Image (spheres, rainbow, N blue to C red):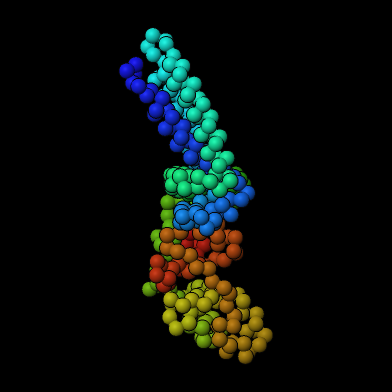
Length: 316
């Protein structure tokens, strides 16, 4: 280092680069930045538009770059301007300090007056790139954190549900009100987290369903024959389920009014709940409970009907 005739050249270069990023920061902090960047004398139109599109992110990145370069220049000066025997090259040190003070304050002040825009815009892609990279990393991290949080919440709800079931089990067992069947149902519920709707559903080929124009009387006969109180109602084919026919909704009506028995079931159906094959059973059970439904239509990845699932399927 002692033989280097220009020991302050590299630190000075770093300070000059820092001043340019300071100019970017000052430009974006200026309330007149829109006017400065859209000035007819500005030849860097695309870079001006990019800065205006993300001013806050570019501002923070520019400030970070300025601080990093100033710190690097100071550390480099400490190693190049102080000799091994402790001698300080005062001339170079004083010159470097004066130069740093001049450019670090002078360049930003000139930029806000509409001068030196070209070199400032020349370096502007770097803070914009840093902003883009950090934004991408942050969004990725937030997404992963959000997924982990949702997974934790789902696990917590499952654990709470299990605790409630176990509490009820102990209470009813102590009162001798809980039989072996109920105990098996509770044990089955505790195994739900690893199971999806496709595993427990009644497949499409085994579905009992009626067309929307089927009479209420015929639907009641089918319900009695198949032993189902809730039957999906479709238009044209099973891929177009309109709702669910519940025999309880029409029994009283049919007894009071004979004409009601010949009405189509489309006039006496409830809204249906559709869920994907991949939905986990804890989430499905919670959704069915919140919407107060006992039967859900399971759809495949193409939107067609894959099967149906009932509360009883989840328990049995």
